[in-house]
Length: 466
Ligand SMILES: Cc1ncc(COP(=O)(O)O)c(C=O)c1O
Image 1: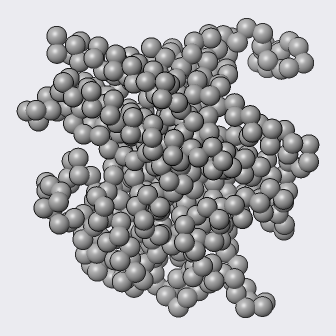
Image 2: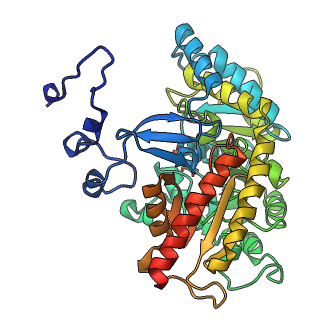
Image 3: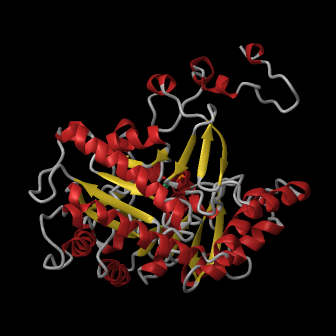
């Protein structure tokens, strides 16, 4: 089989790039959450990327409206990050995190301690978002054991949230579709309803609801027994929930509930971190300090597999220990703090800081929101959610009359399919669409993104309404 694809030339690349989209080549792969038989009939194989654009093997250009998948915050082909990687390649590519560390990893940990809010001063470097959430949850269990509360082990999370694909992260995940094929998941995981004001699970309306969704967490912890609950984990803005943005009172009140019950609060900032919401972290956007902050995706901007967690001093203290005390965090992965990924992370974060991409995320985010308002006459956009350059909008058949699209129409995905044909990549569910372009995007580029989106939306509305 291998000989069949013998590669000419020293570069190791077939001369005709379209060969890489041939079903015979693709059938040796399994992609994420994709039915491969359907994928090979309409594949997407990228060959090159620069700025906010990808080019596939046929040379077709795509505007990356979702930063890969909430990853490429500093844009594709970023010169500063590439230079840092080239330099690091010549120095050292691997040093295990088991018995030592390396220069870029130390630099990255110090930089993260600087840019994270409050006393989130101690960093564990990892390679992917699931590793980060998994490690955070394990950390809370060991923390409670070491601080005199060994009975605290339950992890509370939110329905519709996503925390990763490994078993612990999946057990905290609240989207049925992702979990059912693998159930039963782990014991010790409990769930609460999310703060979905656009489709309140309690049938209430903000602000007269009294933020029932957060009071419910208080009640669940009481009913479970606070002496059994270790942590609450949640995304400050949930992607899989539909860019669910909690009302301003929600997170401060959740912080108070966790404090009252001795429960650690974990923010999963795998998507919201590194400038996405217009501040470095959503913890700053919402002005609430978690005990542990999980990071991934935009941390290395896609230039290396990179993730991690930051813990506050009182958590770290439980692991720092007296001389000779055996209380290390009993957890690790071979590639944590990898020198290449760490060098990419340092460069990507400095790029966000030096170019003030946080301000750009706020400015272009406001611009895109204003442009989306121009589509109100279509009567299909229910509301606009999110912060900074993490934008979501709900979709209905008739907003004025409150009529949703029939589920089988999968309206959002039909819009995204049209957009893809036009060369715009979106994240879509049947009844909402998300936009999250690189934080480097200019106003002109944002207008192009908007035009392609608006055209796709209009065409799909016309096709459906006749
Ligand atoms: C909020 C959130 N947490 C965790 C993860 C898991 O990250 P990874 O896919 O890098 O393991 C994801 C991935 O999409 C995510 O969106």
